[in-house]
Length: 408
Image (cartoon, rainbow, N blue to C red; front, side, top):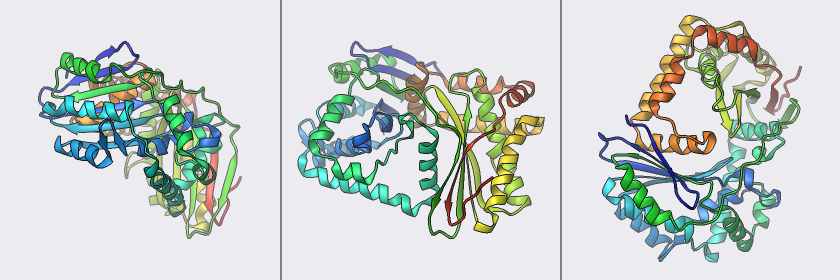
C-alpha cells in the first residue's frame, strides 16, 4: 500500500490521500476541530446541535434537495460530534467524488441554519440527553470522564438540559461562525483515487473556505477520587479511569497491547478472573482512550449490588497485577488480535480515511497501515514488561451507579 500523501492548502486545510488501487470505491472524512472541548460553559451541547443543524439545507438546496443530491450520487454518509472534533464522512464511487465534495463544501461553508428547523434540532438533542437515563453504563462513563478532567475534555458532548433549553438560533449561528474554519481542519481520502486529482478537487471546492478552528485546550486533571450516582437500578455499574501514555509516545503500543492482555477476548485477564472464575459480573471490559496529548484507560463492570464491592476489588487487583508482567503467550495473543483489527480496517476505505484524519489531528502526521503494524510488532516481551513495571496502573478515579456505593 502506498504511503499517504499529505498537503496543506493555502487556507490551512490539511489534505491526506491514501491510494488503494484495488478498491473500486472511495471514502473521505472531513474532520473539523469542533467538539465538546470548545463548547462555552453556557452553551454545552452546541457542537452536537450544530452538526445536526448543518444538514438542514446548504448552498442552493434545502434539506430535502440536499439529501436527494447525495442519494443520487450513491453517497453512504455518516457524521457526528465528539469530545474534540466533528466528522463528516462519505463513501461512494470515485466518479462522484467531485460532485459529493462540492455538496460537503456547501454544508461546511454555506449552511442555511434555518430558524424553522431549530426547534426540531433542539428536540433531538434533548432526546439524546434523556436517553442516557436508559443507558446506565453510558451514563456512568460520561460522568467518569467529567470527574477525571478539570479541563473542558470532561464537558459532555450531549450538553446539559439547562444549556440546551437556553440555546438560541442566534447564539448557535455565532458558534458556527466562530468555530467552523479551514485552519486546523482535515480532509482525508482513501480508495481508488489519484492523489494529484484529489488535491485538485479539494482546492477547487474547499480552497475558498476561510477562518480557523479553535485550538484544542491543554489537558488538566482533577485529583483521583471516588463518586457515586444514586439511581434505582437492578445492577450496579462500576467505572475506573487510569492515566496512560499519549498517542505518539514511544510506549503507546506497549500500552495498547497491555489493554489487549487485560481485555482482549474470552481468554483475557478481566474476563477470566472477574467473570469466569468468580462469577462476579455479567459484563466486564477495559478500553484505551485518548485526546490530543493525553492517553487514558477506562475499565467497566456491571454486577449485582451484593457483588459490587468484590467486583471493584478484583478489577483493581487485576489491573495493578499487570505491573508484575505478562507472559509470552499473552503478548502473542494480544498481537494477533491487534494485527487482525489493523488488517480488517485496512480493507475498509472508510476506516482508513477516518484513521488518517485522526492521525493528522492528534499526531500532525498521517501514518500508513504498515507503519502502525510495524510499531505493534516492535514491542518485545521485555519492552512491554519494562513499561508495565515502570508505569503501573494505580490510583484510579472510581465511579459507581446504582443503589450501592463501592468504597475503600
